[in-house]
Image (cartoon, rainbow, N blue to C red; front, side, top):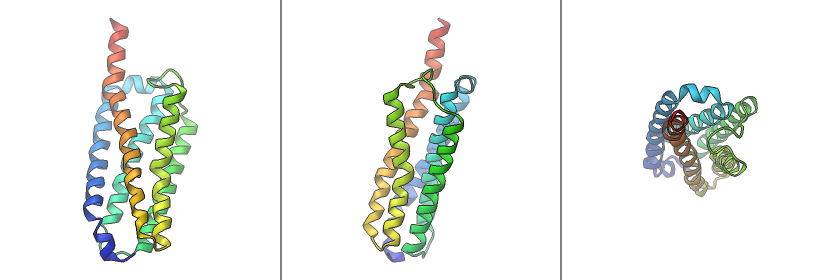
Length: 174
């Protein structure tokens, strides 16, 4: 893949960088609002870390895509390393701070959905990177479901932190 072909994705990379940074900020606000409750239930720490780091991953992927003049090999390698690093970090954090059934949407089904979205958000960029290294520029289209996985998971968690936890806390007080 040539630098010119990568340049065709410029607007996509700008957009995911901006969205990743913006949603990370929104998540911080939601976490701040609910911090005492988030720290009191182990399941929220893992979800907060995953949501924040998936948005950080989107930012990193976008920034790599915006580097001028790089080859498909370089960009593919960056995507592979990024995806593996974020999958590893999120996985290690989740093992150290596992979810429990006490958290909002802590049941088996919602946890499975979050796991699938998290895996998609981290491993699809690896596949896109492998495709670029193999001179398959259409592999960049895997970044769209990556963005959807990251956005869906992060927006869902932002809702839980900013709205659902305070609402349930207020109901318990009433």
